[in-house]
Length: 245
Image (cartoon, rainbow, N blue to C red; front, top):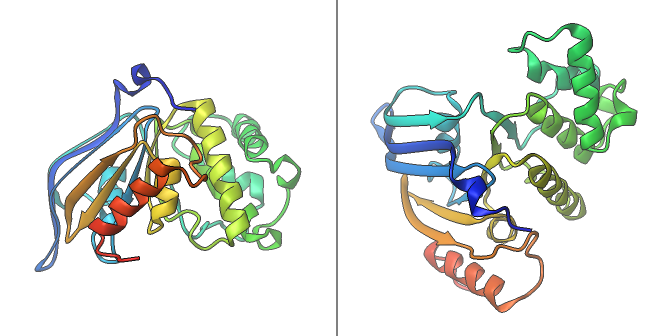
């Protein structure tokens, strides 16, 4: 399923001509990235190319940069490590995503329970994080990111630490939630196949610059079949990255 173009007319998040330095190191160089509502954009590149920095600038976690940043509301983030509080149960971990809201404790708990239902963990609301599997913990992290109903979801290698089968399951869950809620997604990943399987557009970052953009027309999700288009997209991205197969 591809969301209609009408749902992509509004910008969920955008960076325009952003430069950033870490000391003397020029990390981002004139980077412009746009994510429309209902659009999935994947950002790939070699280690050290600046992918996570782009995400952190767009999230507002770092502000020491030039250029413009625009987002709808407060973006939500999920990382490769779930980063759950081990001293809080699952429901309270998810409700932490509502700390900026003015909801009562009861209202926050109800919202957290709905988010846990969405990710298939309604029965683990009272569990402690250390009793969860890796896939379950990442589902809790995703629920915490989505509980405040963001317009923009920022994902930094969210499935990289999971085994292959759990990774496929989490991709399917992300797509289900995306179809239901219509938020924009910026997915930072090192996995070319994952980018092609999930995204409307794939951006390749090289030495702090957007070096290439691939638009995937009529994106099928997940694009897991060995179609000619899928293989062509994969080959194009690997060539840009300098990977010969």
